[in-house]
Image (cartoon, rainbow, N blue to C red):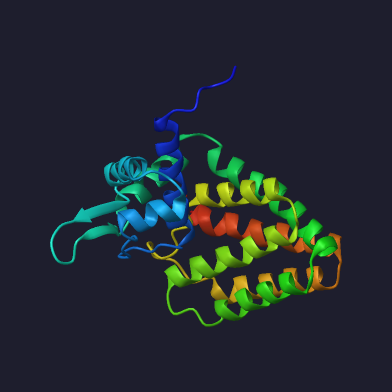
Amino acid sequence: MVRAVTSQTLTQAVAEHLRTLIHHGEVAPGDRLPAERELAEQLGVARISLREAIKILQRDGYVQVRRGAQGGTYVTELHEPLERWRTRMRTQAGEFDDIIDFRIALETDAARLAALRRDRSDLARLRTAINRLGQVDGRAAFRLTDAQFHGALARAARNLRLETAIESARGELFSPHDLLPFVDPVEESKRDHQEIYRAVRDGDADAAATAMREHIERTRHQLREIVFGPPP
């Protein structure tokens, strides 16, 4: 059945897009969103649709709107959406592992295709993301740089649908490393990214897929501890 496109579905899409940016770390706690007119132009939507999307994010605890000289829309510390996300992962049986399994399916195939289709500019973007990972000065910066690497790899696969699906799946996981007591996985992630990069650079599709699978399995264990607590 064909569903009619309404202003509400557009509003929800804008809210989901902004929520994904926050989950990826592209907009961090304490950051101010661009002014309404500027952000609406960037997203290519009417200001009324953006305004309604901001109301959704405000209701869900992602942003707060401040008045006065320092007014604007700011990302919160994300405590409320984080707890809601953790509760959902804990109570909806199997959803956590379903998302990780889906990521493995998508990103191992993307790594395989990237090894076959990458060009010099793709390799340069991957190297830049790896170098930035070694220079991060906080967990929010780590989250953003990690997303940049995975995004660059997805683009190198030369499949827009695959790239879009990866971005969506990664957004579902939240990855709130900067919000919880957690040992920074920076060095481990850098080693994983370097191994994936070498396989992609060398055109070794099987090695790239294997390295990506192992990387995301480590992410599964890290996030499981965040969601469910340390094993007994």
